[in-house]
Length: 298
Image (cartoon, rainbow, N blue to C red; front, side, top):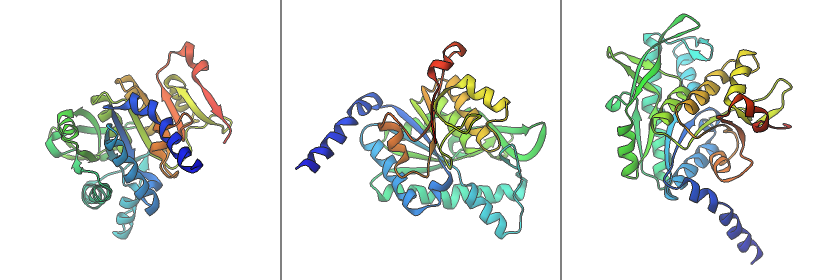
């Protein structure tokens, strides 16, 4: 009987979060190790389906870097990156689209549907969901790499209203009709802003953001995140993730989270517990930054 009561109490602990986020949009960027480990794949699909069943509107934007790397390696094509962005020529773009829109997107949709969800796969080209233009990275032309200049939220809103779960591959279309490879973190941030999402959650392969001394930061203000990028503390592939959090907050998203996707049921732990499993980046004035920041030892 005690075990049964304990389970009931766990459910009751989630009640305040269920009330708070009922009917809210939660944009989740799915990537990293969580996409490669079978157990984590299953737990992620279960998490998302549960969110839908309890009245939230999850929207999934997925990556697929390791899968793209593997395919390019098989073809004898070297992968190159600039500031965390993949250098994308026409040949690479065809592989990116094939992997993301084809096999990866359909696998995610299939997993969610198998767990009782009603997921629908999309690319940014469907219904001109994501309009893009060429991105220059550090004044370098790195090929068919895009930045988002427009999001058509009606496509997603229509699916949400019909109780579907949108699963979006980060491939966009230019005004000139060209197809662009877009960083999934940046796509998730722009979609979250366009939908006025309650939360943006980025699943990644690190515990969160660390400070100069290597301590994990639980909660930090966007101003401090900008300073850590400028100071080189936040670097390489973490830069696009943090920048998209900052941009999403500026665009009206309530809260953003960089979450350790290597933890089973990381999405549920982030939404339904106080501690969470990563770093929360929030809006704050410079004067309030010290009060907002919380650090825990790794």
